[in-house]
Length: 202
Image (cartoon, rainbow, N blue to C red):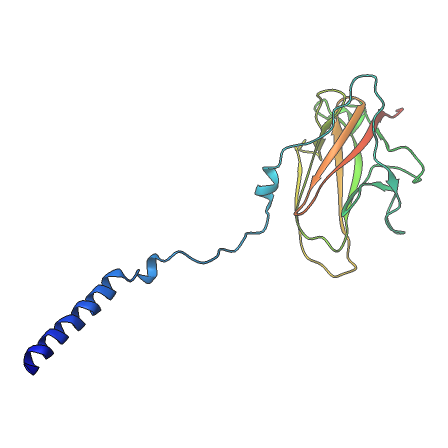
C-alpha cells in the first residue's frame, strides 16, 4: 500500500512540475513594463506644421512687440527663449525690417532675392533642437535664409554655462515687402514673431 501511494505521489509531483514549466512565460518574450520617452529632435520639430496667422490685403500687420532683452543685446522681437534682432534701434519702434531689394543685395548677384541681416540669440536656459521657418502673412511669398536661400534655420544648441547666451548671425531673404512672420519651434514651445518688411532706400 505504501509503495503504491508513493508512486502516485511521485507521479502527481512530476505532473505539477511539468504543468508549471509549460505555463510559465519565457523571460525573453515578456513585455517591458515601461519604455523611456525619447527627447524631441529636429526631425520631430519638422513634423510640426506652420501655424502662422493670415492677414487680409489692406489689414494692418499684427507685429510683435519690440523689447530690450539684455543690456548687451540689440532690440529684438520674441517672447523667448529665442529672439530675433531685425535692425531696430529702440524698443518703442514698430518692428519694421528694412531690407535691400534683389537689385541692390549682394551687388545684384542675389538670384532674385533681397535680404537683411538678422541676429538670433537664445537664453542660456535653453539647449537642444531649434527650428526657424517663416512666410508672408498677407500674400504667398516665402522667407529664405542665408546665402544658400535655405528654407529654414535648423540648430542643435549645446548646453552651456548658466550665463552664456547662444548667438547666431543670419540673413533673412525676401522678394517683396509685406507682413511676414517667423515660426520658432523648440522642445516645449512654438512661437510666432511678426514683422513688417519694407524696402530700404538704396
